[in-house]
Image (cartoon, rainbow, N blue to C red):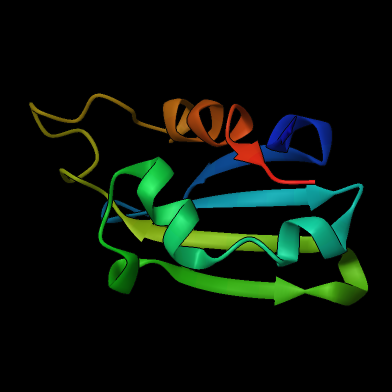
Length: 96
């Protein structure tokens, strides 16, 4: 088994007060693109129906956007820029 960090570089971005976007810059685009959106959602602990996924094969990028659990800057916001979510994805196990 490989980890996602072996296949892609994950960058998190603030996509506004209500969304976080994770960009996966792929070294092995086909392997990353084959991962089901529900598997990403499970790793991120969010509803799979809430995840917006954009596959950009010409750029070897998979983008995932998801609603923030709390608005950015709110008292309960623990991750202003989504960095913890990006780190969670990097450790995701990917089948060979």
